[in-house]
Amino acid sequence: MTMTLSIVVPVKDEAPNVGVLAREITAALVNEPHYEIIFVDDGSTDGTSLALSQLKSEIPHLRIIRHARNAGQSRALRTGVNAARGEFIATLDGDGQNDPADLPKLLAEIRDGSSDLGMIAGIRAKRRDNWTKRAASQIANRFRNWVLRDGATDTGCGLKAFRRAAFLNLPYFDHMHRYLITLMLREGYRVGYVQVSHRPRLHGHSKYGVWDRALVGITDLLGVRWLQHRFRGGAFKTEEL
Image (cartoon, rainbow, N blue to C red):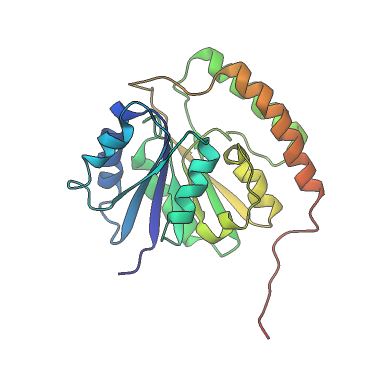
């Protein structure tokens, strides 16, 4: 059996959400012959891993990886991609706000693209967050676009599909998941966009506050801008002699 697709879902304290989400992912991929679903539990303390373990007999495609302590979303994402066996990776947030029904759209785009298409990023057509979070996100996106000039308009959407090899070429740092578009472009890959839906959170609460994200984001932004300047061009062809 050749594994072609891996779905990676980082989660932290999402026990009430993971069961519904895992079943929705399975339903969305009914036409996929060979795939795996990897949930990476980033040090949850609310029984998230137990809730996932109870689904193993129901969902044979499910794999569960647990961090012994909370290491952050970017580390959880990297753990999942490193463990993945698929050529193509699709990611979504573990809070249930991304709709797994959108996965086939992103996967069709990345598979139909040429080898220099590194990633398809989702753009939320209508945010289902409160006005404070939406306003803060708009300001942050405009500022980061002014600094990085990567054309990204919705870097916070967790729905993405990319080539595993392309991701593994990117430099790793904490919070790098917010800059995947910039880093893909820096590496010489093209990035495409697909409009996706967005749902209100039904259980739990967001792990990020407006101001703590803003303070960390400024440091990250300057670091990514430095990375843009410390690179001598994009992807190029190589051959073994």
